[in-house]
Length: 193
Image (cartoon, rainbow, N blue to C red):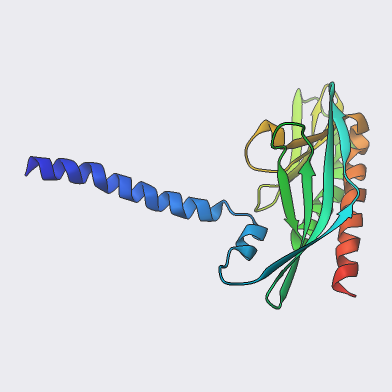
């Protein structure tokens, strides 16, 4: 009897953990992965290249390749802004920003742009202002020693998922905003054709 109880005490938590793992893996899918995850359905990807982003932080140069990805599944189409950090020998990270999230990000950057000047004047040792989507895409800036550095985080984990725009200073927000507004305009044109 003790052996049976002992085995149950070991097996039961393991089965509960595996169920949590399955639920967690579903939650970790971004919106594009959720859209294309149905089996038995034809899926078409159409990429249209756009201007990439370039910046630096200390001695490192950061670049991205960007495109608008139209995903067609059956009779339904969705649009995503794809940003992929270029790294020689490593996974630099990739984000797929859904069309509706792109508008929210643009509005958030505009709001942060209006805050950056007053935040630079604050007496904080470190200040960070950022916006995050459901897919863990982050855009924002940090201020250290009264100098603003704008950044983008493409994924939830890893330091290699960042693009920094230290060379743009407080104008990094306008640089990112211009890029994102162009992408949004391209998607609008694709939808309305």
